[in-house]
Length: 410
Figure: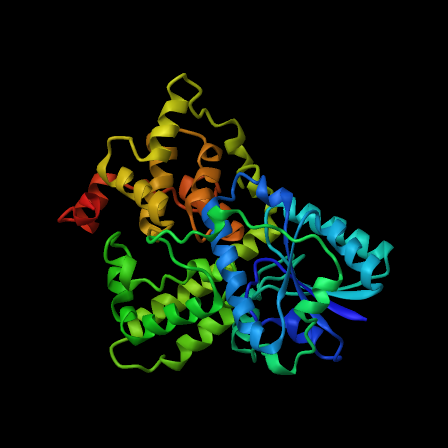
């Protein structure tokens, strides 16, 4: 009997509870990643995301090579791939993290659960971070978050795992997925995916870059260096939030760093907070949290589509708005303040329905994380009925955050 670890948004081998659980009984272990047609067709997904995923898979394979292991990369519907494995190998156990994703992945998970039940396959799911599925009240959630973040990590000795070898996988005669050439390209301005790259970026932050984090976080130019730049690695699971938080605690008493470390710590807390909100109110993918905005008189005139296109392509004529969008399209990253300004401009200045822009930004954010993206987008669009509506003035932001126009000129 084998144990299959199904990788999704958890592309790492350290602090990986499903892998930790799968290797406990000594059964052969195979890591499975499925290129799913539903995600290939998903409008939120972009070539930049698939490149990052591919780089992350390559990184894991490099780590597994000395241990005679490799990821089983397949293309197709997950249930169909699992059925092929069962036909070839017989009974197996399935291990994975819960995915706090889009509605399409949730519906897919329900099909996988049904398939496992019909085929007597045990599916053991582990919590993702501090997010609790089916949570009815967040009253004591903060204590739970701190407990989870300070708990021991789920690390395994890769050499002690009974890996299903590459030659064994080859003997299964499963069809191989031929990667598109475009996925293998590495544009110079994008962060590279992978567990090793995640740790390199984090170590460099604590070595020198992070000291001015709290002071440069709102600057579109300075933040590119002073911010942690860990968001894509967290979004695609190259590193766990617990690992990053515990690394932060090691420097908590470091002289001259307290303000920046405190600011970063609060944002790590917000990370799970927003994903937990999304998990509890996942309908926000399709409708505003405050249903009163369902009938809000957003624009329906002929010029609307042209204005959306101008916003998305960075050709509105407003310098900082266009600079931010062009930067996103070319690098996949801008800081939080500028992201909020982009949403504010679309909804509050152009009076365009937030749903006209939410997928556009998901495509260009290299760190697209559904559980953060939708709650944040609605919050900045002012359609939650909870948060104070914030209207960001692009000219005020430019004068205060880019006074020399260095970011705009670039």
